[in-house]
Length: 90
Image 1 (cartoon, helix red, strand yellow):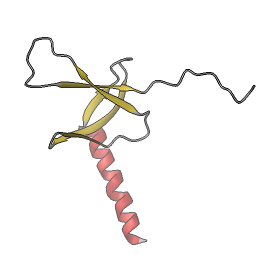
Image 2 (spheres, rainbow, N blue to C red):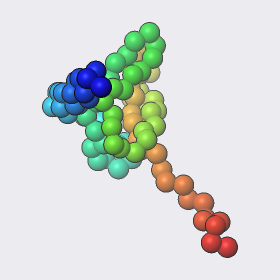
Image 3 (cartoon, rainbow, N blue to C red):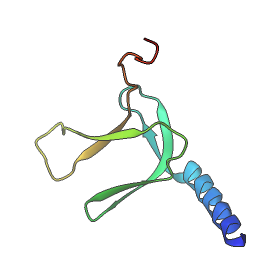
Image 4 (cartoon, one colour):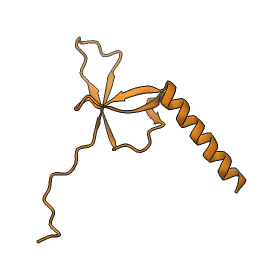
């Protein structure tokens, strides 16, 4: 019981730190701020830490302006809502 309270407290403190000092993620499609997160690149993997209470994000590579493939840029955009019709009401 006590360890769960400590975990909750540490999680809340980390979220406050991330919201203050984290990197701002902007939706590439709409231009709105999605969240503030910590982005970690480790062993070829991208870890996004601190993303809470938002829509799912889709990462995509942005093509470089010049033909330089030494560094890739990544953009995030929110997942679109499905556009198929509601079949339950038929």
